[in-house]
Length: 542
Image 1 (cartoon, rainbow, N blue to C red):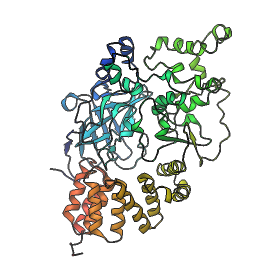
Image 2 (image 1 turned 135 degrees about the vertical axis):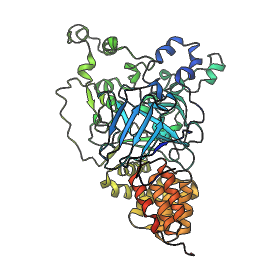
Image 3 (image 1 turned 90 degrees about the horizontal axis):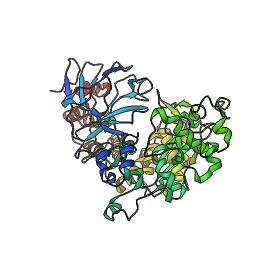
Image 4 (image 1 turned 135 degrees about the horizontal axis):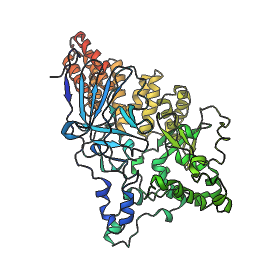
């Protein structure tokens, strides 16, 4: 029996059913490659890419408890449900929810997080293991929260660089998967070399994608796909990063933007951006790439790591002074020229500076900064006005409200050009509603629904607008259509319950809150509203 008020301690175990087909690890998925490429296959199995994700029980850490500022405690154990690692979340209200963890995400070099499924939904744990501190702590952005952390929906875009053959979530949902969200854990051979079926069926005569045969942009796209985020990543109209296949340009699908003047070492996943700024890359041009120094199939052991990368440096720096007299007391080039630097948006993490600075200590002083209000495209061909406008919009949603006028002016100027672009219309509708023009916003959301009847943003926002206009029947229809497949979203549940209450449907309102509380145990906003539902007005004819 679910208890909503939190007056007594209760234990809940979420049923796990999000993984319809059990994903296979790299060692199984790539077994066909091992028949001819055994040495490469065996070396690759120990690399961070091959181990970028896996079954949770394969990455155990000492049991630990983390307490949030809101008073909630999160405990990881190694002997949970059915012998798997489990996450125990205890709310400040005294209720406890236990979920068995399905998979880990992260090679462990920097850290590890865990994911779990419940009733078709996929979520990320609110705490993560950080290698630098050898301990668990709250995930980035959660440490300062003054209230219980809601369930964290895990979207397919967050999986695509850690798993292989990642699938889209169900239509109209953020994190619900009727079938498997991904088919393989870790990064498989096909993730970089493309579909191998033709290669296998032809006995090796049909060649897979080979980086050395590609032009520079297509070659580098294979690395850029997962090792570059910039400040803002924008999927182009009607395109998805999930559509990327080796041999094409990633910038045909996405556009990358950075704020002018911002230090490339201040953000995570910026290795490619830093490398492009290095003197090594600038002077070598297209002939130098990530694989000049990195062998994707092999990670050198710690005892030979310095010598391995030194040999890469000496392959270009062939003057005898570098091999013989340049700091003979320290053969580790990386320790001086690629020092560790922290990313401002990821605590407890140190990243290798890929700018390959000649004199790191003297070059620590920051270059003169411009105001961080101008987005600049990087590694992106033909960045469009639409992409730039969406970049400012996404940066605004990420927390920089000062960018709203710029996002509005640029996107509004494209109003006649985005009539078939659901994502851009959604963005314009959100900003139009925020500016107080509900009628115009409603028209934009209706246009989105004409393009995509399952669009979550349009359904929920148009439903809210209809409720404000007193059109409760339509508001209920729209909001319930959105909530039918998104019962885990607290904000949506609150809106459904409020509109149901306004319509005199107190039982329907309570049911919506109970549904959301299954995934968000102890969330104050849901529990608070549930105590107020006795004040719903009686239903009246409309």
